[in-house]
Image 1 (cartoon, protein in one colour):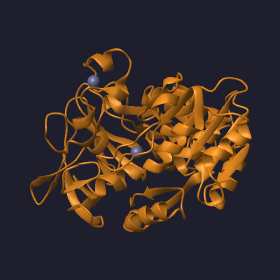
Image 2 (cartoon, protein in one colour; image 1 turned 180 degrees about the vertical axis):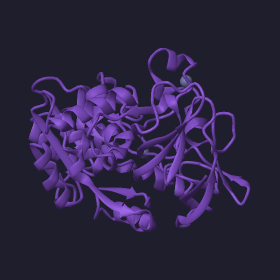
Image 3 (cartoon, helix red, strand yellow; image 1 turned 60 degrees about the horizontal axis):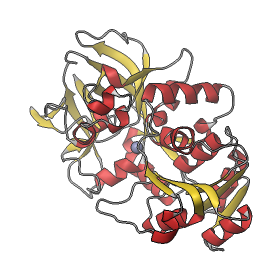
Length: 367
Ligand SMILES: [Zn+2]
Ligand SMILES: [Zn+2]
């Protein structure tokens, strides 16, 4: 079958819209008509080789659409079902078997190996394979092939074009709050970075017992949104020293900090913002090889520095829970989305980097 896709032909170049061929779904696989796909900074990292996905290939890892064809043995979804494509997992390693598929032993190859786990690709150009299965999907394409096990069936009546970002960025921010930090009643929390991920974390924090929720960012416009979605205090780093300001607001160090920027200087500020028995969660994506430091003595004070992927839990559990909160008006992540046509994918990514758009979503060209 022919597809239209945004191809990354080599690192540090713009995506190019091309016609490719996609395979029929194999056993255990599903072919999905992509309606829309979010753009996450991880796509930008891969474009610049900071996450080494081989080229030429197709990126995109926040796809949502309609099941168009199923392979043999597929039972949990049927043709016509609306689905979000969650993260892939092998299902047989120790971590998958113990209920932690985000930390599947095969995660690296499944996310960024350039094909299926067995090394084959589902996409070809002029008869020659090009790399597929970025995060098990490569959804910058009108159709994608994914494993049945990564799919999350959407509830009836939800707008499919708004679902894709729940596959990664939005779930990562919210999951860090619900699954990693779990703020207790009356606690203090600081969130560094008020982009789509940080704002999702703030929306999630508003649903917890945290009574001080501090947002830190460079842009006043984002801090205004942080307030709208649940921050009790905001700090613009241009005008103040964020760590000193956090201590002033809390009357002591914060109980929890969440780092969403991937900026190494900010990672240190997040670590320094929490004190005794404090917890810092790192979710921002830094360039490959980046290192951070921490003060040794104050880390010994029962401080925990934890890294987290994808919001932990399973894609099914997270996405279903967030959709339920969204339906109740308690998690309005969809207000952050801005649609672009596939032909403007480079402009969409640039808008996300400049901060003019919080969460770009690429709408696929189907008749
Ligand atoms: Zn596994
Ligand atoms: Zn992502």
